[in-house]
Length: 440
Image 1 (cartoon, helix red, strand yellow):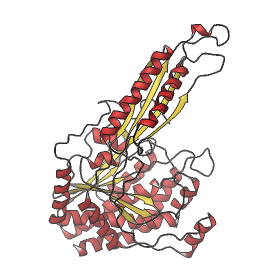
Image 2 (image 1 turned 90 degrees about the vertical axis):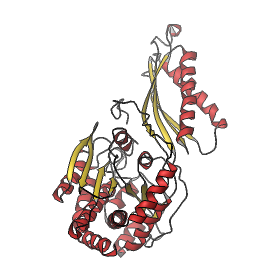
Image 3 (image 1 turned 135 degrees about the vertical axis):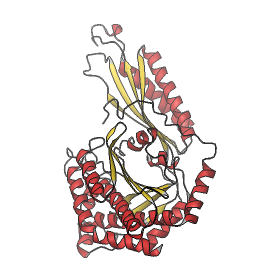
Image 4 (image 1 turned 120 degrees about the vertical axis):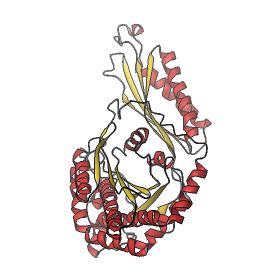
């Protein structure tokens, strides 16, 4: 097993230059959610060149892909992302990779390539499946892929994310609903005859007031955020249309189901009180991450096997010039079992197959996420060194899961125990396409 993993790690060391160029191309593309056409095609082409059978376009997601290698043995998935963010370029108007997904997708592709090459050259049985998952920033890609069966048939899966330390994340995340409420009223002149109008904005504001009163009566980990994306056209016209977009988060999917129903009741009350009608659309429904201790320890073992990367003085100086004096992390931190507050649709995957989550140093401590300060580091050595550590760790993890029957057995037994009696419900309507309202 050590020889197999070492073979993959050594091979990926030799691919670092090629991987870096691909990551920089995706960094320059900076394509936002559901528009990652060039980024997806670049990764698809690379995987195809390395012997993977690539399914381009998965379900209703033209920028999603599944790349498969191998025809027998355990199947391990490696999840990748490649969407950028608005307002994260070098000016407010520009898009940029403020979350490091240019590194994310590239590392995942090369992890799959490295694992497949080691299996092929050793003659060992095993299947490696690389998933191109678009639209993570809008929490849609994996939700729709899961609904349509993309992750069926896996024995386990691994993923990663750029961070400020090198460690395995062993805890959970928040479940979440993304819901849009649209209110329809009747227009009228605000001065001459407002009594003939029915304000859709009034409906939204009454709803929001009701939700804000709820905040006293929910548990502290609950987070409810909203933005009014359409509040009318002009003050002297009673708004006939208004729209509000909600995120409802809680530690468990069952809690979100209950909370979202309470939010819906506030929306109904807003419509009733304002004399308007209301329509709701569930854009995406995210599960909390289901921890798998056996898999988390497997990922951590392989991170320690690979070891942390080190930085040149030029990279350290770059970070200092950005204003970060705390040193870049160049060691492996312990496995972290803590739960975290954000939501991520990898949680949906974790209820379908055991999922391991890796964090790797790609920016200076204290760097704000989703910012140009982060974007800059993800486009040069600071992020790219971390990208290769992630690729090697995920490749080594996949090979251990495929090659060590006892490890995979532990991982599967824990998963099956925790999901006994559970039936996955995608919650979003069958046939609904991603982003049906064009929300950005």
